[in-house]
Amino acid sequence: MAIERMDNVGIVVEDLDETIAFFTELGMELEGRMVVEGDWAETAVGVRDMTCEIAMMKLPDGPGRLELCTYHSPDMVRPGPPVPNTVGFHRVMFAVHDLDDTIERLQALGGELLDGVGDYQGAIRICYLRGPSGVVIGLADDVG
Image (cartoon, rainbow, N blue to C red):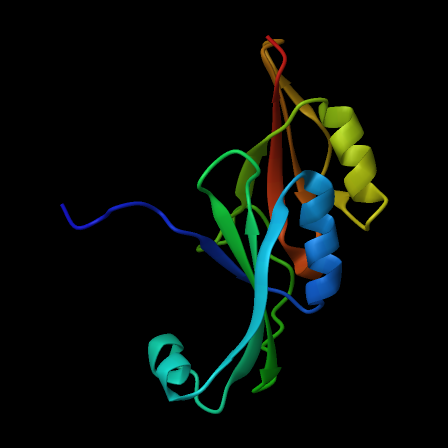
């Protein structure tokens, strides 16, 4: 088998500091931050004359990571914010404790519920929330 593990999910954002603060408030930890540029990066990514800055965010108790990235050059492409039925990247889902508190803390940093909190048979409460740069995350609280 070729796959050893899923290493990370990459998300391009407009404001790296704002997005780091958002995911830190969610409970992730900043693992490292660096500027990426040069021929090797341009070849791997397929973008010429690029300079980007990345921040690797890790889960406090597991192997999952998010690679947050902002491009200094070339200019970033800014499509409209995706909606849940957009083909391609959908959302990153996080299991949380105390969904209401988590929503409140993320809303203080600009997070916006897409609609409301759904309750599936009293066993799980779930919502989608739009964060910095339009990134959609899912939050689920196992209450049953």
